[in-house]
Length: 424
Image (spheres, rainbow, N blue to C red):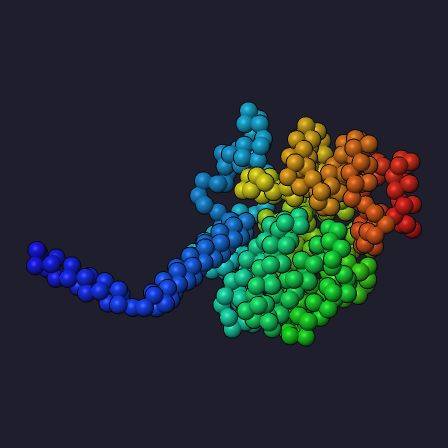
């Protein structure tokens, strides 16, 4: 052993002597090369960890849950995490169907972009969206973009999603799904008051996606959303119908179509579209929340309460997973108000306001919550904070159909606000 150790030491010494003979320039170059390799290695590891976290989150929200997180005790634990009173745990809501009966097989389906209810063919169709690019890194960035896009509609998450889609396009400029993803982000960002974006820019982005792949359902849904943003509802509906035909289980197509029908005053069809969206994505709370508004406008109170309860259960789950989800807190505050939970409404509203005090969506949703509670002045304060004559036509017309604001409509301040917004 001693001889072996001596041999190793002499070998090290020989290498040290050789390195010492190198010129200073070569030593610097060698040092930089090693540093660069370390940076690349660290970036690779961080990238993979981020992807894993996003995908794991998508898996959990798609119904592939770890043991112990379901049932009555699990519901009470999630209620405590969401900020509820542990002395009065809420019963587990009978809202959605249970998770997959065969997680091993269905996890692969979720990873390929589907959900546990998707058929094998539907999952293959979604996976082909990733195969549309020859670069696996571009596809990974695309998945991260979709993960952030569905995580919340605050500007923070929308901009993160947009950055991920842009990174995918840096790698593969002809990646149609990533172009559609950016168009979706821009539609929501413009909705949220980002004046650096124009409707024309969004339309061009979605057209670019279609020019690259006319059979991509996501591209048709993206163009439909752009047309909805522009107030061209009939043209938008034609795009959504094409998306339904190309990919019958595309969540976004049903969600966007539901909002489009809502603005047209077609509450029954909107409720149907939003119900299908909710069935396709079991962690989404927005579709059921808007569906509750549709049922209220139709005078179907029992259906409204049921949809609001299901939506709230999903919002509570989102907050349990991410307590800083201001989007879920603000949207959930409106649901709590509908269900008559005044104290929790105010608590969630306050928490959301602290985290995102200037966000358009958040303030609008809080205005709706206060209006339902009968806190008229607080509701009007919130509306006046975010509404201006530059508001998009689609936003103005959504306001006109929003039943949450019905208690405000005869108030002089609300009437003055409507006149200021030049809403016919």
